[in-house]
Image (cartoon, rainbow, N blue to C red; front, side, top):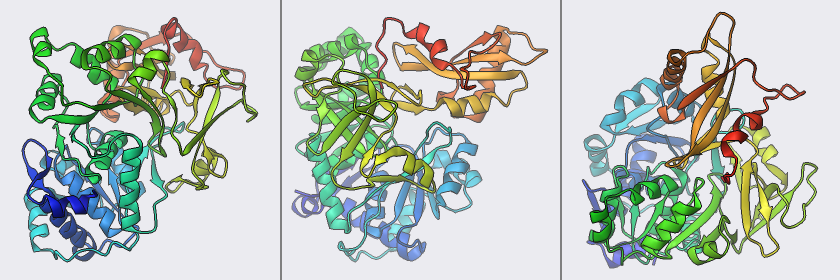
Length: 504
């Protein structure tokens, strides 16, 4: 049953609830259709153009997702924790025609956007109420989501996946992708993280399209998560390892009161997870966990159930039926089973399943041959097909399920007068998986001190989203460099990872 069928069969049942506002299935389809008319007719946004959103979790996210899909317009979800300069870059690069924001982010949106800014809530409601309710043709080109993701340059790039020819075909694809990963609409879905996270928002949308009602948390709270799972009879949800750590820290009384008997499927990924943490969650909640490996660029590559993981601890699973995974050496030659190499994936016959917006060179660099691409993940494939991740060639840091790119942080710190050279890398963190650390070589005339370390951290926080700033700083007489001049980052970070498995 797709989302339009669900609206016809159960029009008055709740489809989306953000704990403040609700939408029935009929309201969701009606408002999404009207919003699509607003985008095309009132704002004059042509098919293929971009609109952006900057707001916290609320029901309008799903209305906007469906509206842009119907209108053939690309939606750019902006991380609400970015600094103004970062938001300015994303909006300018995307060329967003309209930016939708909530009250908490209206000043940020207005200062960062040259485009038209519209407040969700009363302003948007008034536009929707006046708009046409005529059904949108579903045989036209659909719109999609363009998430911004970074890379070795540190500058984020928009990613566009190749879309089907029609709205109906895209809705069918979203439903099929959901069923492929276990989100089949068979039970209510709890959205625990920010909707603009590609996996969190994407997996919830899959389930919604397949007919699952979605409850949205404003922000993650461990005790509230337990309460909602039981009171809302949640069947499906998505967690990152940091959330699991916090759930395990809930007081004994609340843990004992948790039933969890409605849960059937809990996806997790996006960050390294310690074996004790995952084992403890399986022991507590049962074998309901499915881990995945994937990327914002192309989607999900592998899955592994709880039982499989207990038999193959540390693995991220085997390739999905339509995915091929190979591992190659530096000369792009296949490596033997069990040997570590760079992992490449192929998803069906499409020669370019994704591309980077306004960056043909980066797009070309992701593909070894038509259809075969890599994000720089390194790992091994065992003879039985189970994949184990080892590292990422780009040295990306994943903290609390969020990607942090060292080059971006290094560029910010390098602006400080005391910094002659800087290296940024991830070190183990029990709660977050990884935390950001910087090693700094000081410029002449400056002396290392705790006060200077704090100053540098605050300097980074003023220029970047706070989660990207280093949590600690080491000072070095000279940073290690290779003969090529590249920083020998591994020499700096490996001592912190001795005896620990680092996985992306």
